[in-house]
Length: 274
Image (tube, rainbow, N blue to C red; front, side):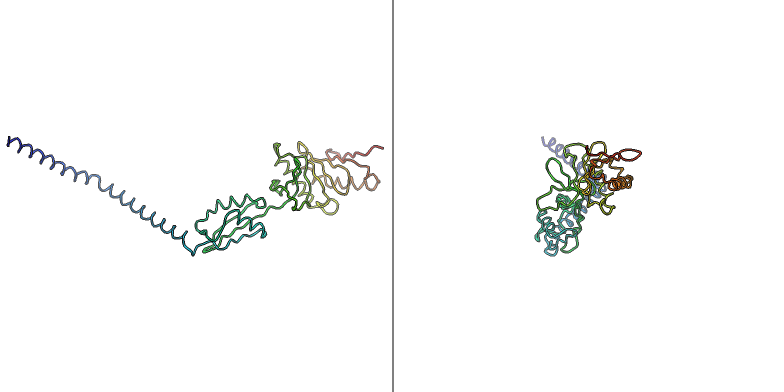
């Protein structure tokens, strides 16, 4: 019985010895790679923790608070509205501001076309704003909208807004190719902006846009409807002036109801009957 117990103890000792021998071998086999990974992960963790600690310090530091919002390119009213809509206040950290989100938010303002933002440490946010500039007024579906020089509708007109701009009609916001049609109307406005006198932009009262690129122009100094393609105005401007000059000279200008410039050889003038 004692002999069996002695043999069992020797077997256990041998197994333990084999285990102790195997462990160093495994350590020798895997420790270099594992050690490198461990060191690398430790360095990453330490650096990340350092950056996180520094970031937390910066965003909570009273020396980097937002104290000045310098908005350029707009008046005081719009400046105040931008600050309010973005919730900018002195308790905010200049470091923690998300400039991309602020840009997107500011550009939802109807009078703002685009903005550029930058930090100026320690306390200033600089906003360079490009304000929308009306070129015409679109009248559609009984609503009035401002249109800019790119043919973009950017704001519904309110009672206090300036309405001294050329009128664009014949376009519905619900129909396709609205932007393309507005661009054709804006192109006419740009052409007339280079004219002087009766044919200047100040003399234009309405642009009525029709399908397939055709338009009708109405001027304050002549009752006749002027028909042409939107792309042809610049090259046919001299011909239009000659026709109107001839009508005035012959005393038939008041009887003219339409001047159609959509002809290769000249213009066709319509008159009142009788």
